[in-house]
Image (tube, rainbow, N blue to C red; front, side):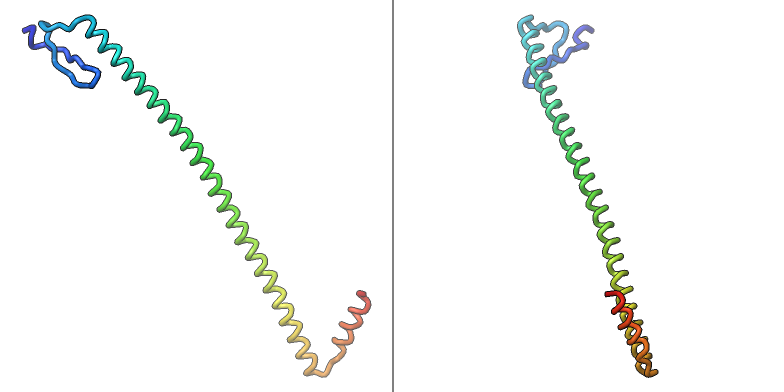
Length: 127
């Protein structure tokens, strides 16, 4: 019955061989394998810490990129608003010019130079 229970002995290279209770390894071999496992664990810890640092840097870069993207979107909206305001002002000026031209046309059809005379007087008093 004793041979049915076994232990797994793992070498530094990661290969294992099954040991039964009847087989023994030397104390020197046992401690050498423990030291090797400790070195492997330390190397793995170092790699994991390096990956964690890299992940933190990546997260920080992603946050910064998101901030820049948000600022660009806000600037885009502001630009669209300013363009709309400029177009509105342009349309108002165009409507004013059109209305003035239409009134001048109607006035000239009616033969009234009174409007022109009043505008000249207004410009003269403004100066």
